Length: 565
Ligand code: ATP
Ligand code: MG
Image 1 (tube, rainbow, N blue to C red):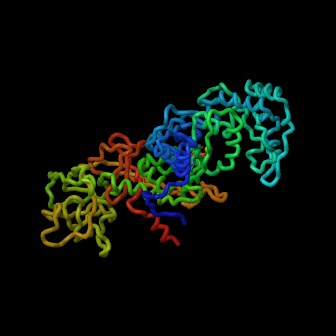
Image 2: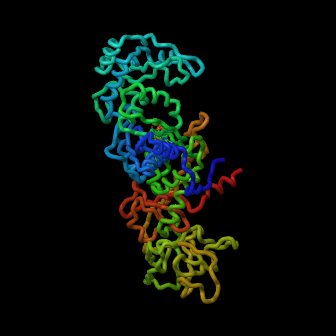
Image 3: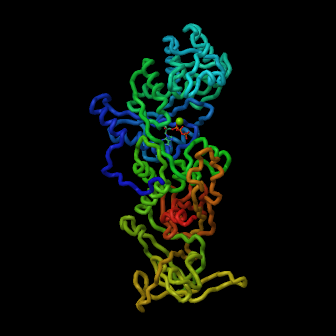
């Protein structure tokens, strides 16, 4: 099983990337640190990207360097300006600011085109007419070497002429490509004459219709790093096999600087998918309500759900940076937000399933303003005012006609404390002709605000309440995990089969204390005894707020797992 306990992040030894940076500075291989975060704008950022963002921006800051944001936008077919905007928003929301202007690989297309011509002139690139299927066949396998393309020995002049025709749109997509001439027998398949330019007659979100040929990711990435003076190009382990190619381009082109690539293990979370393709499928097929659905592991989904930037940064600190692939327990992310909100979220009362409580010895027109701290341990957050009246709402789950001793809420003939207000004692119930409970009648015990009853009969429990005449009606959305399966997309499983059918529960007619009428999204609350909540930025309307439960008070999931057979 994966780790579930929060790890102390203080006094932890530097991780391997920090060690490399320190050494490179000490040995003066570099004079300053330059990193970049290089998303492809083909989807929204997710929690895995947050790890990369925290790492790249974090070490740049730690070592007094700079980090830029570069869109690796070499595949116009799958990319979109909407994604560009969402990525910028998410990076800033997480608390990071890139150095200078936002950068784009597409901003280097002219230079990359020149460098492609340079390789052709050096006899290190050629136009290949093999179809994609033929090229695959020529490439060989992990155990068999590839074969040279019959077009490999074209003359420099012919290659230059054909490449120009490619650029001028004289060929169809797939008819030919530009390939680097490296080694078809190389053990590393990435070095078997990789395609560096392909024909794509597609409109590009940044360059419009200027190009009908686009560089490959491998041809654009390292060269973009070199143009920007990136010193440490940090990416995830699946690019390890691309590093020899990365280095080959840097060595064979007149680039202005010599970046180096380093790889770390990507973040995998149980009960979660973090593939942009699969997340897009969830959105496109309406299994969720958009990229920012509060059940999504996207940054925008976590934000709408009520996660704070600090909780996500702390989570990334806790999981650390290594070269060993592992699966992190999503409980750790939940721990991180709970810990943050417990310390920082102001308290409020909201009754999710209201039951009318009538205090028969309390005057009908009386309104007392009870004062409660915004936070029990943080006086500096001030106080709030809670109107107390003869008719209140309590939660249906907080009353029983009879119960055993374990039940520490309101029971007929027994006492309970109303949070921040009086001790009361329940006298009788009012029901309709079907026997449904309509009201509970009780009386207050005088002089018990902030004090025990004078007769010495102390209540066993405390329940929350709101005034029946002074409250705001709201909708509450409770979320559970989006997937029932610990590894929804492993081993050829269809991740859609693992979708949890009850991951969203909508409760209407909830009643919250009046102070919540000016709640804002991004502003967390603890609804006492219910969990942590924030205003939903999408469905809330004036006079009809919707609150998302960010996370429950305790880890109920662990208990459910223990109880299951
Ligand atoms: P996906 O595979 O979901 O499409 P990606 O890796 O292709 O994601 P990019 O936009 O290319 O997405 O990622 C930008 C940066 O974020 C890359 O440097 C990538 O290595 C890093 N990254 C992506 N996913 C993770 C993850 N799960 N953990 C850590 N870093 C990640
Ligand atoms: Mg990628």
